[in-house]
Amino acid sequence: MQEIICEVFEGLCNRINAIASVMATGRSVHLWWAVNEHCPIPFERVFNQSFGMRVINDCAESYKYSRLPNHLCWFYPQNLDGLPFVEFKQRMGTAYRQILEGLAVETWEKPTGPALGVTYLHHLPDTDTFEQFWERLAVVIGRIDPRSVHVASDSLDMKETMAGLLQAMGIVVTTNTYPLMGHDRDRSPANVLGMCSDLRSLSGCGLGVLANSTRSSIVDSLQGFGVEAIYTMDDKWHRYNGRDHLFEKPVWKF
Image (cartoon, rainbow, N blue to C red; front, side):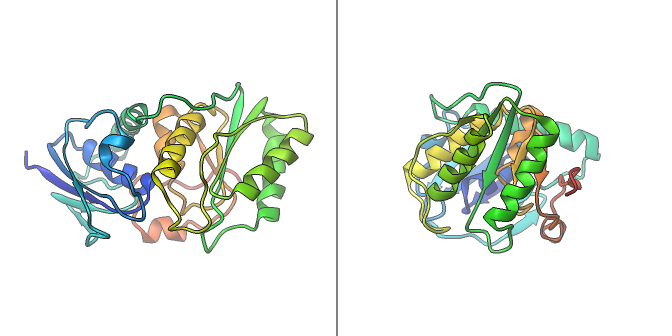
């Protein structure tokens, strides 16, 4: 079978989507990993294994998007070999789990089950306000009654505010401490590794992970651990327009 060239240059979770997509084919992969402002850290510092791929760290700021059978540069999951949906979803789940278990972090918070995860990205232009997000988070908490909640956010103020509100409800809160972002390009090696820790923590949130936008790719890889995504914004257009071959309609309505 012909080798696939995979080029990744955006944020960590978008890169994971592309890598999982090519791993799902079972073919040989030549990965070009851009060390740039989106993810300023080489591949071998993010992962402790190569997953059988030939990996080259590159200094490119970007690559040309491509969704061809033998060349992928994309941000949402892609079914390159046209597999039946159920088989593709199973293969992606296996790939996601391998990728997250291969993250080169040794410590992360382990929320006590039954646990809910929360991820709020404040830099996305088309998302809920924090007040709207909190209102819907309170609805979810009322429905499923989690014992603990792991909070992940790119904003220190929002992370601290959310943790305080949850603790006032008598809920145990976990967070990972690392440098956060002032804006979408405000990234550092420590920030990327902190996101790796959050991915490991969120993978233990069996009640699901609440995200503030379907554009967010943070929750995608958690499918490898059977973690359900709960979206507060029904903005499916972004995923359909982006031709995400794995995306399904949110199951929560507010």
